Length: 400
Ligand code: ARG
Image (cartoon, rainbow, N blue to C red; front, top):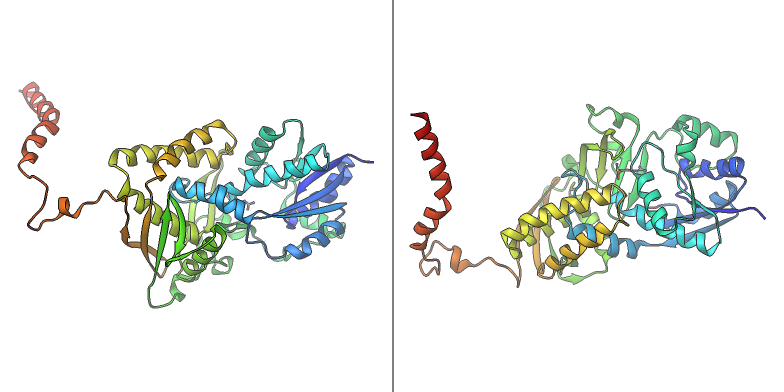
């Protein structure tokens, strides 16, 4: 009996050719594992395709709820936008997939796990660090990284070995999708000066073709987590799917930016993440209502650290738990509702209310009956501006 390896299998080009390559190069028996984190279309045919490509066994795990609750919701609490733009949708799925690979490897007494990442991206880092953290005894094989084939060469290899691949031969794009978003790479997108062609988008309507009337939605949050849409309670998966649909229909969630990969490469990245953009916009706004300015300023630093660590593959580092402890404490007061207006690619908050809100109309109002004592302002400003005033006096004196 040969040694076994468990391969994270998406059914795409990379992981399909990987099955054959591992058999040829290492002589291992290949067991494939597909993790459903949403967005996968052809789950049913995957088993057949995997076995046809040479695997001895195929597993499929529906991890959508776990992904939404334990990974996506943590990112929303951290307002996670890498370099202010990317909601790290792909990055979040990697440690989850790694943990399932390790589970199945243990169950099957495999000696290795494998994934289809290249040697140029972030995903290899996310997989390798998570796997090594959870099961340091497992060997990690990354066929595409070791083999260094171009996409064209992979397609040729697949044809030569009768490997069924779903990527239509003419499709030049590399896609990664889950319930939190979709990433599109390769082809013409590699020229950052050219506008992404309309054909690459699947979740979002072009703003030019969006409905002519705005659509309003109201999101309910409890302890930093979205719980309801327009008053009706939803599971995390239902909520993400429904918001994605409504926001996508109104053109919300397209992202096109230059991104710094951990390995140093600058890359042009295109995403459509309608649910992510709506949820983070709403969540940030609610936080501004309920947290003090001191908390907000500090949490911004924590959020950035959290996002960079998650992006850079440190999901299993103790730092994440440390940061989560702070974030979760702040989220105890992030309760309330946020009303958003979606219109032709735009998403704006137009109303919010919270039982924990620090907004006081009595303090803020310019009308009669305010509780704010304006006479106190004079002394406050005197002390607040003291050093600024002194610094300017000193500067002037020294110039004389
Ligand atoms: N640049 C993004 C990231 O590092 C997206 C990667 C997409 N991966 C893919 N296999 N298409 O998270």
